[in-house]
Image (cartoon, rainbow, N blue to C red; front, side):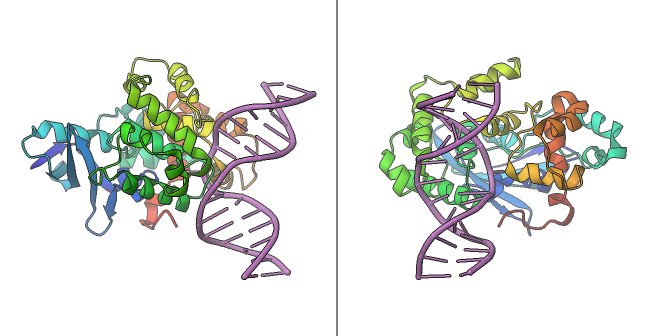
Length: 293
DNA sequence: GCGTCCAGGTCTACC
DNA sequence: GGTAGACCTGGACGC
């Protein structure tokens, strides 16, 4: 099964390497052929999807989804590549601030962020980035996918919730995060937590962020990072890496209070977090080098 | 080889 | 509301 989604101008590399998800399973990124592969649940099937730049947009091919309407696969591809984000207002703000080094964002059409096929997968991966090196995040996600044996796709909430805490600690190596992960997966699986509510565009940021923060294990960093993946960019989502990076980039290497960084990006308003993120990751897109150890 | 530090933090108890 | 201490893991670093 194949299809094309019109999205010109579109730079696949820019979206894929917008942050580290492409380095975590079930994603696979082949930089040489510029193709992104992943496994995703499409209705009740697990499909292997490959995405490549196509004529005037994105071409995709899927195995394992035979019998399903192509529109079901296309919907997953649109989500993963963040194709429905309206960045026109953001790019206008970047053009106005080209003298400060933000013009490239509008010129290259940057700002779409790689998403997982499901919000549950995004949330769990964010939780597994807290208080650890990237190598450990990669290890935990890899172990989780293989532990659940869910056709190679990222496990659904029920499958994670069914894992014994001991298995999460000793096999998946999530350590102290295990009870947080179990509680979150359990609430999603039982229906006590409806993640689709976090994706409702009409809801205020503060309300959604409050609900994310109410989940154990999701502190300020995790909540802001997940908000970014939800297309809500008012907050910066500072962490140890980005604090260091923005200090080098904008404050002559001098680390200061978070409030100073927030003031610097405040002119971008509801886009402040996206301007900040693209600012500190700009060099990832200049040379095409590997981002992660 | 061993000990320490710290990485894309968060929670709880306590003041 | 702010702060200290505990919490898992694994790689980097100094000795």
